[in-house]
Amino acid sequence: MTQPQIGEFTHAESIVVAAPPARVYDVVSDVTRTGEWSPVCTGCTWDEGDGPRLGAHFTGRNEVPGRVWETRSEVVAADPGRAFAWEVNGGFVRWGYELEPDGEGTRLTETWDFREMGREFFRQKYGADGEQQIAERVAAARSGIPATLAAIKRVVEG
Image (cartoon, rainbow, N blue to C red; front, side, top):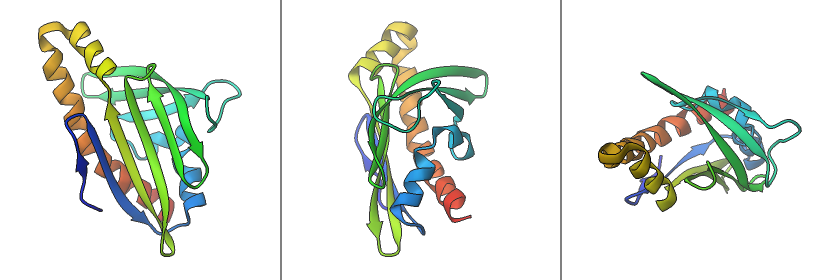
């Protein structure tokens, strides 16, 4: 893995996967497989008739000890072999994958951006505990991204 790029509310890390970008893209853009690699998201379902295309919508199911919740996401980037990204709950958070050739394989970068509107939602929803809830989401993304990338590598190369 490469050195992480860390901002206060952003994070990105990369890994090289021994497969061509088109194959890696086919895996990461199939949100129905997310449960195979995510430490939090146990699965996603496309809205009826949708798939990995710009403007498509899907619902994700997330689980951590003591808590289960769903999110609604919209695909905001769908460039086969290059980029796949989505925004959660109307833009609270943006998650994405960037792909670029790396020798015989693909440098896969996962990105995360916890936007101000999402942080403000947490402040309003949790009141005095809002900043702690935000800090927990930041920590989860920073630990989850390298775990996710390693798992995607195993899935694609396996």
